[in-house]
Image 1: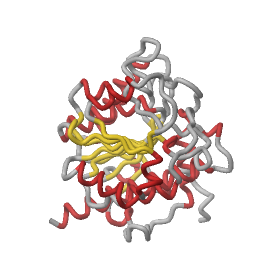
Image 2 (image 1 turned 90 degrees about the horizontal axis):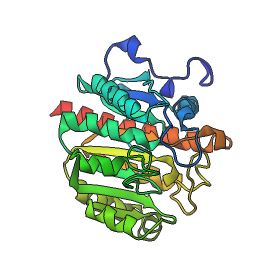
Image 3 (image 1 turned 90 degrees about the vertical axis):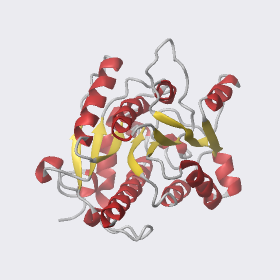
Length: 307
């Protein structure tokens, strides 16, 4: 069948209900009630699935066939209340708990970055406090926004407060753009985050950045959270809070490939807002990013099974 035909599951994979269980479940969370600027990320998951049709089963960059190494399936969407953020957070957490109950790892497609908090809660319940590698233009460690504690700018502040992150292994990558105050950086540092700016990636190069990240993460259980606005708007115009001067899609993919062998236990990819996209630039970049993360998880699972 041509790649453009048939159901638009992620990478044309089987549905979870067709295979029963999976080592890795790709799941959508169509929720964007926590955004502070452009809405539309609720449509991101299905747009990424549509753009993923052209993904093929062998990944030469990692010399692996992730869908042969492990059972990967599309688990559909987690439906969350778009009018009550606190209730939505609870729903997402409970659904993630259910999906991960038998050891399944999640590749979650957002949705806005609010969803990272319940996903991290579910991951930490299974693995204990986790290392976090956060790719984003923004820190997402605000305390509140217009008095709201749960928004796409606050998930990692809440996660630190709740003790679900290993504060010796927290990193932001791709940070850039104006802030409200210098205190944003000071408070972020007090929480334990290290920052690799987009300019650092450009000046120091991918290999040096990867080495720094690997040393910081070590053998801790690792959760990767990627806001697509870590990419420059030239590579990802379809997002809610774009900032100039971001990573290229090549830099992002190469950094991820450099994480091979680490204990990646789950990941999310958020803030794809297809209404602002052009010629599928953003969704193609997002689908390839999710594919690299899935490959990393599949390789790790296969290695654990071998001994």
